[in-house]
Image (cartoon, rainbow, N blue to C red; front, top):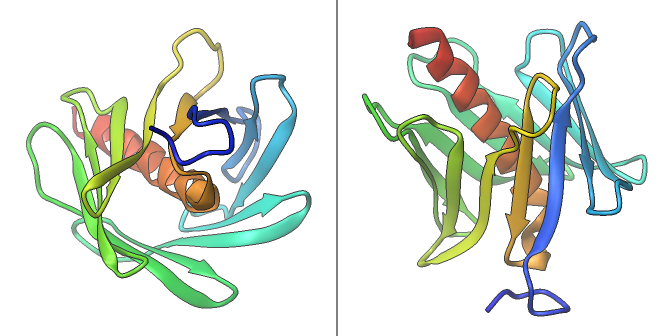
Length: 168
């Protein structure tokens, strides 16, 4: 069962804004209310994740790495560190978060991810092909206490998908 107030997963939807110089995303609930706003820098290496206009997390992609590495910070403190593994198919990013092993595992096309913390699946992210925007994802959150970090992990999924498309 989900660790949420209702016992059911929380459904959110992340959409990338198309006509911007730097990457920007909005995350909506099922009633189309904006829950998060995400601003990236022009290089796509730094992201500010905001809820109600207040920054809740920062996502940083390390520069100059052969395989992508990511740091998630809250209030200036690192709370998770992840690195993309070398894989021909089925992309995977792994590291640590909250002192536990943290894994993002995807399918062969890279548009369908499970997020696993320790031994439990805390979220599922997949492509929302019904939307006519650059990138759109459905996010099913199974642990409400980790909602903010799951949004940061969804950004990592988007980045991995974009990188994998370059090499196809």
